[in-house]
Image (cartoon, rainbow, N blue to C red):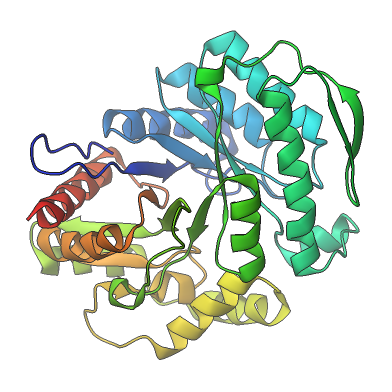
Length: 342
């Protein structure tokens, strides 16, 4: 996101949008929707764009190639799940994008997923053990991409011997790495692999500073307008109440061992009614998986500034419905940085 205010603040933010999912909308237009959202995001000044991965969706690396071919510098933030790919295959993909396009990739390291997906893949690994596996897995990827002459590792989950990566990755293209930081196991993994810990945040006034030296980010949707009443109208039109969605979300909460899902569910049950800028109705109705900030540019900017002051520097937004929405979001971030500077 275009967040620079020269002379006002030295705060540096990384803002990512999110790519449209292949499970939503018409199949024949999906590739064009990916390209459109990528171009909107780049023009809005986003650093990158999150690309989801689960059993329902097309391969995130192929989607990332569409993104790269449709833009000049936007960085795909690719969701990587260890049960889908060998760590060498991940490192090879990152190095191949660097070799072919001279482009940087970000990696969103995913320990879990939908329970039915994990069961179908016969992955019965307990929650915390999945993060232990993720540490081994990611450290192998890091070492390969760092240009080690040969990588050997014999662990509980991964074993490689004298593994070499060619073509090598130029070090200025070394990937940024994100991981969920909602649980203690996730935070421990972030520290062990040198990743940015990303969480679904509480309301800004309730968030505490991340651990010292740990990169930290939040996943949050934004609907902002010059006039707050207009923002709320847009929000309620886009995310109406849906009883079927509410029941689906309740069922998902019961069967999930995800810490962030449980935390958001608790917050949703206790959320105040009315026009509180921290809005969980889209999550409650199973329309999206992140909280939203809704209101005027100034009001949303005030809430964003609280996250920034506490220490969050990476923001992953929801899927933008159109390019204009990113323009409105940019305005809210500008208000936030003006508040931080003052």
